[in-house]
Image 1 (cartoon, helix red, strand yellow):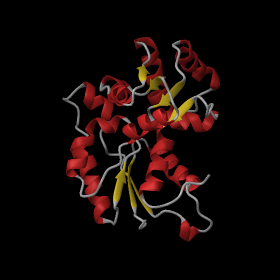
Image 2: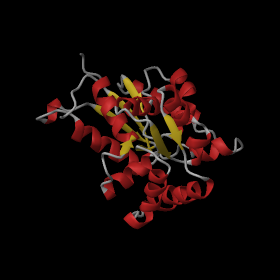
Image 3: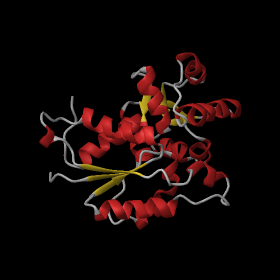
Length: 234
């Protein structure tokens, strides 16, 4: 397969963007600089908050900025676009329509990954914007999997972790994280999707159980690698 250049619409958030780039490098089968993927990162921190707009349309719309970034990346040589923000996929149709090149769909790919793992009942942890949009719920149901989402109180606690800690550059402790995992296990989930790329940062820092968690950012990284014609490291 001909090698393709990946364009990353970043800044959503900045730590998750850098983690995606790092994950791509670590998961690519390569033994020299020249064998690694060519990718371009636009760490555009001016993109308006996706959840804020989903909950209140009087807030700035992130879609026009993301479309402009996709065009900029394509002009710079990107053949495929991805964006390391689960909530941004609420705007996927508009982004793909406005992009000159294909845009990978992290949520659909993550649901497919859950099916390949023979998951039956999957917890989904993400922002209010992601979960109220039902993107993961619909994608999992499409794959024959029952989705489970946090209750309102737990969701508010999760938003504090995402915005008050990770996006603010603060580390999350194992003690802070344990109630989320315990609640999903109590609900009978055989897997838990980390459906927010800030939670992928938590995954890296806490080394969460690989046999329990499906990290959407890792799924996106692996999809980007294979879509651009590279091999995954075993």
